[in-house]
Image 1 (tube, rainbow, N blue to C red):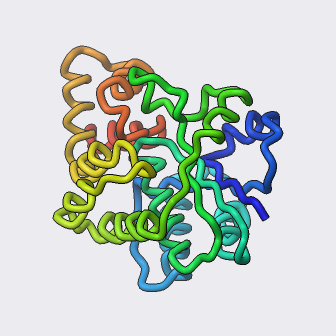
Image 2: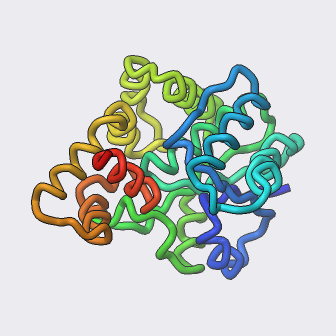
Image 3: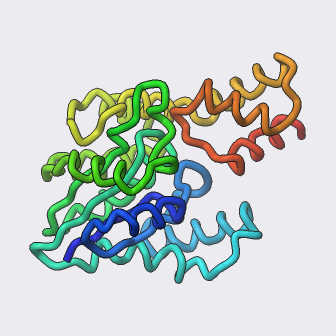
Length: 242
C-alpha cells in the first residue's frame, strides 16, 4: 500500500488531480501551538482535543473521526508499504511531521519526505498551497527516502520540542540530513516561539499598522519560518491587547 500524508485539506484537490498513485491521510492538526503533553498516546489525544475545542470552537466535526483516525493510518501499514510525508519547510508543518515520525519509529514501511522543492528562496515558506497538479508531481519526483536515522531524528526532535528541551533541540538542529532542509532555522524558531512572534507583531503595530490583514501579511514577510495562519496570529494579537 502507498499512503500520502498531506499537510492539510487545501491541497487535496490538486493532489487528486495529479493522479499520483496511493491513498491519502490528511493532517488536520497544528501542533505548533497548544498542549502537546501526555504520558500515553490516548492521553495526548485527549489533551489535544481539549485544546482544539477550546481554541477553535467553530472548527466543527468529531475530533477523533476527523483527526485521530487520519494519523492512525500511519501505524496500520504492513511491511512493504510506502509512506510519503508531504510537509512544508516551516515550523507549523515541521512539528506535525516530527510527530508523524515519532509514530513511525517501529514501522517497517518505507518512509519518504516530499517537500515543496519547486519554490524559490523568496517563497520558500509558502508551502504547497499555491501549487498545481504538475508542480506536485515535480515535488513527488524529487522526494527523499528517510533512513532509520532520519526517522529517529524526527522522533527525537518531537520529544525535545514537546518537553521544551531547548538545549537538546539546539543540538539536534545541527544534524545534517537531506530529509531535513531548513532544520537549523526551524529549530531556532521553535526555541524562540514564546517570545519572538510577539516581538515581531509588536514592532509591526508600533510601525503604524493596525488593520489585522496588514499585520498578518507583514508578519508573514518577517516571520514566514513559523508558518502561522491567521488564527495563530490573531491569538497573539489578542494576547498583546489584554
